[in-house]
Length: 86
Image (spheres, rainbow, N blue to C red):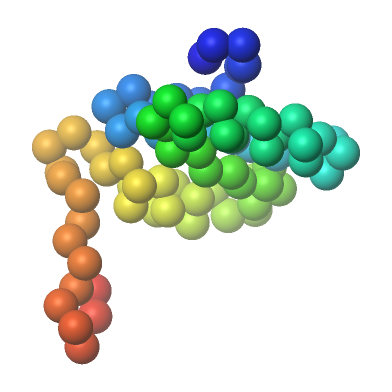
């Protein structure tokens, strides 16, 4: 995307998913610049540690579904005040 390579992209949701490995601790400035560039163009950037994906893939997928549900499912509505989710 532009001058950057992203890990995953959902065009329908304009969602960019980045998986950060151990080396990303040394790339905070570069990551911040990439995120700013993408967000300035209307993309939402979410980051997950690679270890989280390996250890808790189901939790990562659930979070992604909240951000970009499959076509036809629509975004989950927020519960009314005082109501929980089913």
